[in-house]
Image 1 (spheres, rainbow, N blue to C red):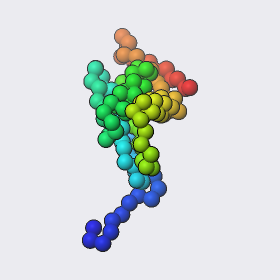
Image 2: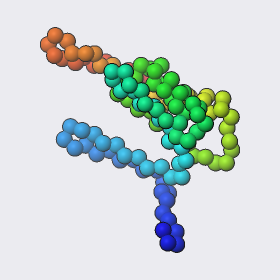
Image 3: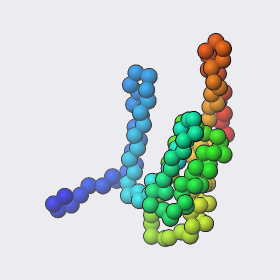
Image 4: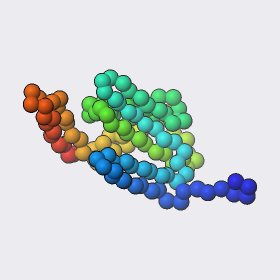
Length: 127
């Protein structure tokens, strides 16, 4: 970093399958906030405001995860700050909207615990 440094110019996304595992990688240019919520069975919840005002990002992101009763899933919202500060009510509204939209643009699968034969039943949902 003697006379400069590198940045990411365009966002990148990669998916790699190794044996039966899938790995996803993402890179973001000039992103200033990475806010996320993760719910892990049996009842653990993890989340981060990523530098936003306290509770302005993590709570609405976690709320979206709870509304769909998602477990073993993570929602991430990336913010590119462009110089206009938002009020806390605006941040809460936007983070909730983006979180819900991200879930709805994907698909949801409901897994049932194994039955007496040891089979796991799956049902797919698409919005």
